[in-house]
Amino acid sequence: MEQPNLLILQMQQKNEKAFERLYGMYSEAIYGIIYSIVLDEPTAEEVLQDSFIKIWDNSEAYDVNKGRFFTWILNIARNTAIDKTRSKSYKNTKKNLTTTNFVDILTSYDNLNSKTNAIGIKKFVEKLKPTCIKIIELLFFQGFTQKDAANELEMPLGTLKTRNRNCLRDLRWLVIGPQ
Amino acid sequence: MNEEEIIASGILELYVCGSLPEIEALEVEAAINRFPNLKKEVEIIEASLITLAENVSPPLSTVVWTYILNTIRNVNNSSTTQRSFNWASVSGWAAAILLLGGLLWMLNQNNTLEQKVELTTTENSELENKLKTTEKDLIDTEKDLTDTESVLAVLRSDDFNTVLLPGNKDVAPEASAKIFYNSNNNVVYIDAKGLPKAPKGRVYQVWSLKMQPLTPSSMGLLEELNAVKPNLYKFDSFPTAEGFGITLEPKGGSETPTLSQLYVLGTVTQS
Image (cartoon, rainbow over all chains, first blue to last red; front, side, top):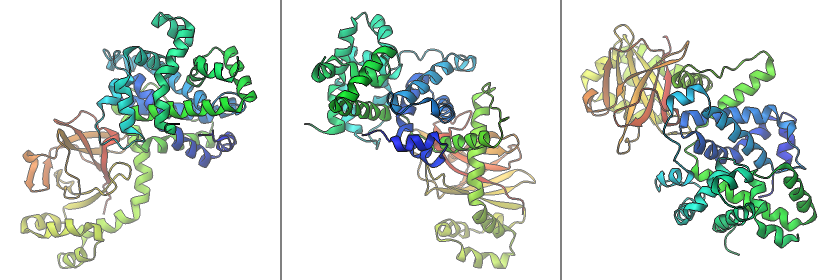
């Protein structure tokens, strides 16, 4: 789970192979985030392409000693996706899709889904309380700042942080196993 | 704050989500550098969130990576490359991806394609011999075709060009389809024996493709209505095609092809 700093440095030196490895490691998660924002596969594919092209073009703007690489590319992807939802062509085709959240998407997939921990993740989201779903949706999927999320949910900042942590607690066992 | 208080406060989760103001993010980084346990905690949080997001992701086509690679290579080669974000329509966009992904893929397939296209131009007497020596993965299809005289007549005719549609390695590597295309009167027969059975509620849709600019047009669905024999379908009245693709679509078909469900694709080679 350590960040692949060597690959990141190689990508910054325009090494395509390193970039491909990083794409393999992060693209699916990033695609999930983008899809939860644009809710349309062709549009999400387009945003994913644009995001990774930006990551390549601006790779030297990331500093391995500062911040997580995942957080950096997450911000790029969410901003690109949100820009897309504001575009004219998107508005013309999508209208009433605003109420779908990540749990709705996840539970709509059938059980043949072969992703890592698919069954455990499904159980995890099915048990999530509505407030937890909103908190995770806003902070992780939609990329709200803590201040905006606290305002939106009418919750003090400290409460927002601890509740978010509690909401995510069971998720970690799926990844590292019980300790 | 000590390590445990930092972890319990939930600030590390917000740090990974990118929701902290810059000054707080810097404080977290300073703390991470001081306490190795915090770094481990951040890595676990990040891995959890990545797993969650991956499970929200629809199937991801590798056509996307091909497109990214082509774009960054073009930019490296000439700084004047432009990308237009004002796509006229979703179909225009889809066509561009199909073109780039398809072209690379077709280059790879080129040798095998050429070999196989020769089949139709061969003398009748040679045809059956050649069929026996065709690659193993085609044997089933060929047998089926020799079954009846009427199908053989189509295959033997010089008017029909054979187009092999190999499986898209990301979606259905084992899949294949064979098209017999008469470009004089725009009639095709499609041998769909190599396609997996369509799941319930889904149906295969056939697209004729023009290359420049790449334009997919629906030819119709692989359903009873268009079948002339089991797994053999006939279509006519469609625009002259330079290539063919088959996608899996919701029942009733779609207006534009769903690229992530592109099962097979091939081009017409002039013989």
